[in-house]
Length: 194
Image 1 (tube, rainbow, N blue to C red):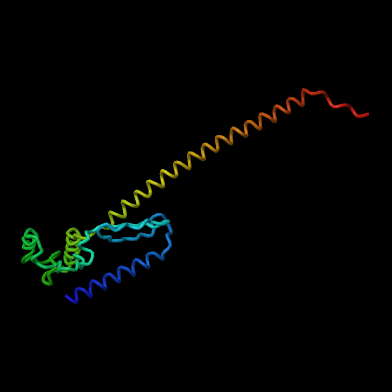
Image 2 (image 1 turned 180 degrees about the horizontal axis):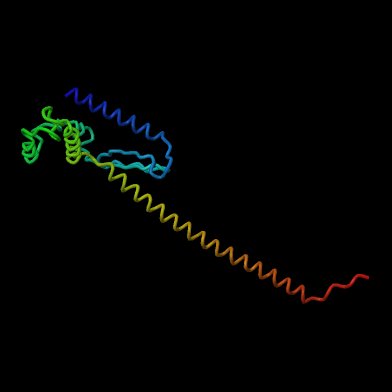
């Protein structure tokens, strides 16, 4: 129990240090915004984002505030937690040898080991009950981009209106100059010098 608490405290300290270093990095392009991922509990308020920072809050129940995270509570690779269909599927590989078998016997048996590890990692990721920050970040980024597009359309409309007004003013000034020139041509000729 004490080892689990130490591991969870070490994990929290590591998470905080990673978040602190992420705050210091400047955003170079639109996909490189500062992203602050927080887990909030109960009715706590999610902090507002400032500048180019994206704040993503995942809300959990008040009862989970002081509990050890679910990913650290038990052993995720325990055979008792594995579905029966997965256990039955593993029997397909009994006595398999050779290429793509991940057994030390047979020609090329090592080639299946990497694939087996990759498949196992994706299966664990699919069954992870943890919070998926990736989808929350994508949704927040889409919401922010929609706001930027609306603001850009508004600015564009103002620029078009300003350009239209400027063209009208320039046309009026040009018309006034032409009218003055026409009036000066029709006026009395200048007297001849003596």
